[in-house]
Figure 1 (cartoon, one colour):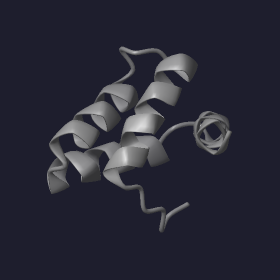
Figure 2 (spheres, one colour):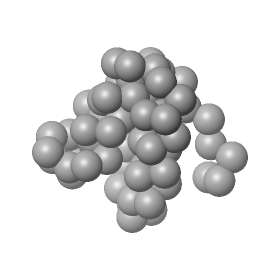
Figure 3 (cartoon, one colour):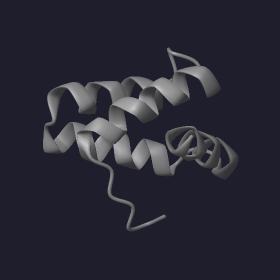
Figure 4 (cartoon, one colour):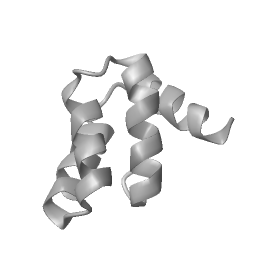
Amino acid sequence: MDDLTIDRDAMGKLSKALAFICGADHPTTIALKTASESGSKSDIAKARKLFLGLKPSDRQAAMAMLTD
C-alpha cells in the first residue's frame, strides 16, 4: 500500500466509506473529504498519510466498499 495512488473522486468515495466505518468526525474522514474538495497537494498528502496510518482492517474495509 506504500505506492497507493488515489484520485480526487476516489478520495471523496473513501471519505464516505470511512464515515460509515470510523465516523464522520474521524480525522482521516475529514482529511479525505477536504482533499477531495480542494485538490491541493498538501491536503492530498495529509489525507494519504492519515489513510495509510489507519488500521489495516479499516483500510481494507474502506477499499472494499469502493469496489462494490
